[in-house]
Amino acid sequence: MVKNAAARVDTRRATLSRWLDPDETTLAILLLAPTAILLSVMIVYPVGRLIYTSFLDLSLTSGLPSRFSGLANYQQMLDDPVFWQATWNTILITLITVPGSLLVGLGLALLANLPFQMKWPMRLSLLIPWALPLSFAGLIFAWFFHSEYGVVNDMLNRIGLPGVIWFNSPRLAFTAICLTIIWKASSFMAMIILAGLQTIPRSLYEAADVDGAGRVRQFFEITLPLLKPTIVVALIFRTITSLQTFDIPYMMTGGGPGTSTATLAMYIHQNTVSFLDLGYGSALAVVMFGLSMCVTALYLRMIRGSETVS
Amino acid sequence: MSASVSSGTGSLLSGKPLRVIAALILVVNGLFPALWILLTSFKTEAELTAKPITWLPHAATLRNYHQAFSDQPLLTFLFNSFMVALLSTALTLLVSVLAAYALARLNLRFRGLIMSVIIAVSTFPLVTLLVPLFETMRALNLLNSWTALILPYTVLSLPVCTLVLTSFFEAIPRDLENAAMIDGCTRFGALFKVVVPLSAPGVFTAGILAFVNSWDEFLLALSFNSNPGLRTLPVGIQLYQGEFAFPWPIISAALVVGIVPVAILIVIFQERVVSGLTAGGLKG
Image (cartoon, rainbow over all chains, first blue to last red; front, side):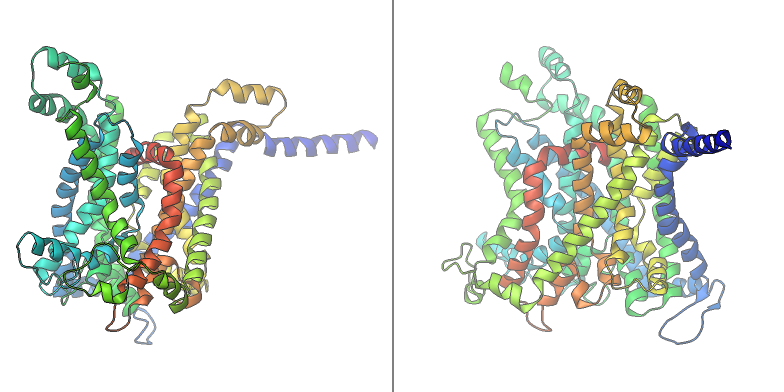
């Protein structure tokens, strides 16, 4: 009896210690389970659900029960001029702001890499734009570009140019949005590039100095080639975020005038939250998901590539 | 071609005057918008509509701040933003500490695959989750609750935090854990008593990244929480605009109130934020 009870206590202790001090495999499962559960519930299931919903006629305003409608939502998309406009705007924003923020970011990074005695003001001037919420940046710049009281038109006037009404013309509104995005995104670019710059050995430049290579040549023959992996990864990352553009145009123009500055993300939001047309909204989201995953695949390849090199 | 040249690693410019110009460009570019908002928040409506526009407020007033808090429940917006950001940061840290430990220490067979999945998730367009999460939250009756935001925000920050923490954990010598375990610590004990305290800077970094992510998020907050008492700051700030009027000085005051907490955080932890961004940002 006594022996039996002791054995039972022993097994219980063993179970307890197995939980507290599990073997490698159990431990791995325990440690990764919360992540796996969160990702499954918040991403894997919703994506499955998204694809399923995109084949449904599911509009909460119609009051009708959802029914399977095959490719009808996708068919509707092909005939929907706003969809094409929003997609084109999204692509155009990407084509303009990704290289734009790279160039500005590269410039800022080169400036920030100078041997300053006080480094924190430079660091701060890159960090604050990064930390500023996109929606705040949209609001602030909407006001910068205000036709009467905006500081942009004020500065144009000061140098003798006429101010313009930024948000009345599709082209000008689009320009203002792109400038804002470039401002906001370039600080993140600059920080990544700055980190890359600081890994370049100083001795390379010293050697180039000895060889008599000028600053410009050093930039093109040392700095740029060594920065290339950093830049490519930053570019792809920026492209992925750019495809999701929402906050800045939403705050600056609300997609207007008309739908001329709407992005795909804004159109998904409008169809889902305003029109409650979940079926069509899902189909739009599937298209964006596809676009984004293509770029992500490229991104993963680049990162894998750079890991094997280093 | 001497000391001053070689210290300008990789830059096209050198010399003191150029450095001053560079500093000016950087600071004006980075801080002008925030500074402009700060100046505007002290202006009167009359000063705002003066032509040509005044740059510095002549009769600085705190009225706009008073208005910002009384016209809309700004304090409630702040509280919601703060609690949602804080709770999702705590949850993110808890989950990502565990995952990062597994990635840094265990001989996982599918480590490469798991890393790829985490990086892929970090690029995930949140807006595509709008429809299914909207449906799920509606079905679970979670629309208009903090939870409706805390859960997606946790997933939003999880990848970058896991990557940052993994690189910090990898830098801690295994011997320290082994010693702790010989002294009778369990594996979990070693993780929370040795590894986590020693990587406190990394945990801080990850925490700030998660906090800023949640504090900034707009789309889901806009879509899931329409109840006035549950709006976060980015969503609430829109409410100041009337149908035709746009009270800029008051909006500016509200924006300043929203920027200051994160700005303080950034000023205090700037070095850690930079290292975290480049450790996590480059990889994901």
